[in-house]
Image 1 (tube, rainbow over the protein chains, first blue to last red):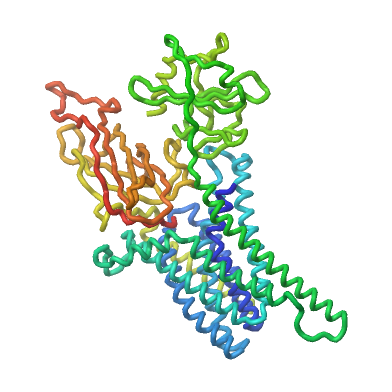
Image 2: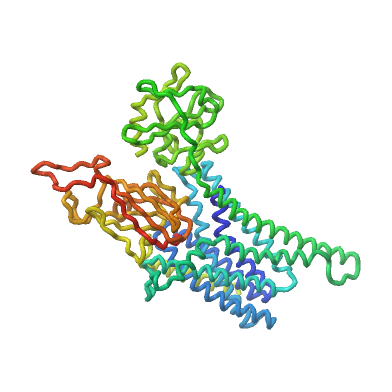
Length: 428
Length: 185
């Protein structure tokens, strides 16, 4: 669940921030018609992204890196033009006419390209929810779906409250400043990605100059900086946007303006309260996003270490493990080095509310020798993160541990060394 | 205005669909590993070409990462050169084990494991889904175990036997200065 909650937030925070500010500014600067064009960009961007996602998921027609390259060219050029048009619009105060319309068309196009870069990937995520043969009704699928939808809801709420703040802040110039800076920072990031294709010698890139490090020593460090600092770019762009919320909060600590009677005063006070709430909500949702991108990211990419193998007794051709050593409901791991030097691992766990044991190799036919680990009272495949049904451990199939023969004698779980030896083929 | 909006949307959709259909090199773009596309080298009696592209679904997943947890599929394409072991020139070498270690500039191991034998539309190869989140100057070291280690036999009699023998100790080869940049697939 967390994996998709994090990845969707990572993909969309910058895009959602820029589009929200752009939409709000368009609403404040221009009349209904140009504003409708900008909104049309949002609709077109979403529709095209869905088409892209569908084509990407079902055909080999789209080389994403190549397409992104074109999107970045447009995004950078349009950003520069749009900043100029927005500044002129604000300065001249013209809500209609050629300037407003050209600004609206540029905004709509920018929104389309911003969405086309990030949204198809997000919309394609559900096809990855299937792991190890899980169906759409499996717990794993539904849990991932919840994480994915949760992040989309988070982004929508963040956009809603950030939009309210940007609309209600007293000077639209603040929004324009933040948006311009955000677009410039975003263009720097895009430029790094463009150069990334040059550095990696993308075969489709037909630039006349071939990259080599000795001639262009500054390029790779720049590309590396932009590639490895997604969080920094997100913090700068979304952080600046949240500054709008903070300014709005400060502007609405006390009522301002004249009022003729107590009713008007109550109305102004309610307006201030409404703005403060929007500012707090936008800041909180920004904080959740950042927490998601830091703590959540670390949790998702935390490397799981398998617990150390435990000791046992070898008697003749048998391995003996005392029942009392493994009947605590926890996962126990054992290991034996075969004559060929292969480490064969197996696991034992007492089944819930039962005297029987779930026993199998610490490997499965689907995910190989990655192994299983204990998370709370669950047994989880380290490879595919699927939670095992402890009651079915020992049975064949799916991501279950490969069954290993055993018998229980005189208070011991007994394994034949021949069986352990034979299992080495699974661990080679 | 509604007509204008509809026109804009239709134009954009038509543009994107036409461009998508006009793609002549679309599909699975491969990227070479190694500085300035120097991704090929000779090891023993075969050529090794190192490439990477988008993570893929494999069945079974084996010791590799599932597609949604990886960010690239890396592979070593092997093709036999002139040899006295009976391999046709250009053919794949089965039954090998190839271990990989990827290190960053500081010498820290950022990924390691073994390439598994597998087949794709472009033929058999050794490869794995891996996760390399950070751009950096990397080195990739491959250790090639002889097919004999996995029980591959050679005819050695006068009439049908081959004159060559497999290498007896694993051999390694390192691709230095791989300017790696994570890709969006």
